[in-house]
Length: 275
Image (cartoon, rainbow, N blue to C red; front, side, top):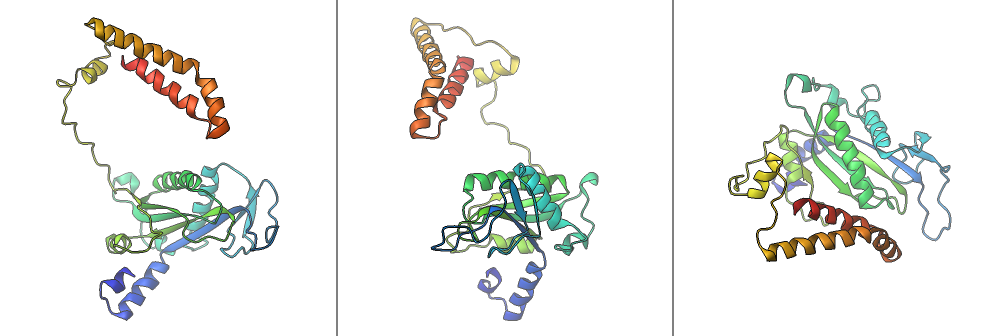
């Protein structure tokens, strides 16, 4: 699409599309199959406690089943399958010497997409995306773009797919090109080499709290009566929030997500450290 929008000739657009397709590998996993519209039961049964690996987007049976496991292990097995040289899903990764991390040279760049197959929420996709990024980084691959969302679903299937695409600067520019596609997300972008964090414009000499923390000093006592009253009120409020942690959590669990008490107690302890 980006090549066509740039005005390239049709044969060049087709050539670029074929090259991109040959640089892609993907795999899906699900714990339950989809249910057809109007049906009460899934199209087929996946046994409880099992995951179907390598299933098709239309619900075709997977390549194999595996016991349910933590997401990091599931993502690792998917990525190992995708990049496996014997299976040949991504021969492009083995056409060049790509294991260069030990001598400090640039790693092979890839984009990774974690896609919901229907019922997997975005929060869980982000967990899988983090596991994918960590696995790729530890296997001499540089995940320069990370996409999470519902891009190609299978009705209400519970699962996700992971897709890799090897990129160079030209292909990455195509991927980053502006698009009007409403589902195309804002992505996490990484770099090939670490970038140092810039120094804060506010130095320790100008920030006495930061300077005291760096030295390991205890906070100074209030110097005025008003300051003493403020500190007493802050510490009193913090203590009450800690004491109310269980009660707040119980109340929030009835109407929300049950994290109110924990959040307020954590904030209270931070207040105590700062004053």
